[in-house]
Length: 203
Image (tube, rainbow, N blue to C red):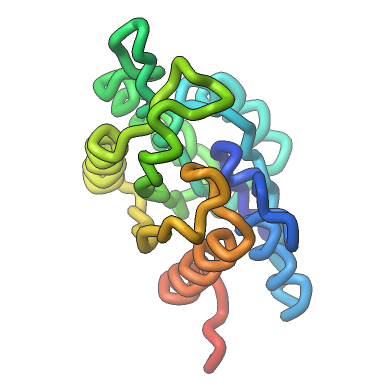
């Protein structure tokens, strides 16, 4: 049985999708319904950054032996700590962490995908109510998205671009709601079909 492991944040984990538990779980359900024999492991953690994934990656990967690895990371790294005038993980360190993650991932598989982080509704995320010391700003997220694109190109991973979510696709300006997760799922599924990781509907 092949396995697909997805490391990431609360968005990866599926927060606020009250219908089907997030885009990763929707992907797993799609596999089950269509008899696609690919185990899906959701390794998203609320508040996770590239530094946190680095700490746990090898242990979790060894336990699952993934043939496909996806990193959905960057948005929490880009979060701005106003009182300290810095990001949670500065851009240069984020780039270094991401390169190291890809290097470590290559020990398991050549199928490595990096999802580009997308924008937020700043009217609700500057600051975020549950962590008023943190702000999620689109100008910062865009810079970290460029780092993901750069590392994908330089380190030999595949960059996954998904469309921007609208305000009514977001639960709280940051996390997708059920409709937003469905949109992400559909785009990821189409991408994996295009990359021939999954069988296409017409195959």
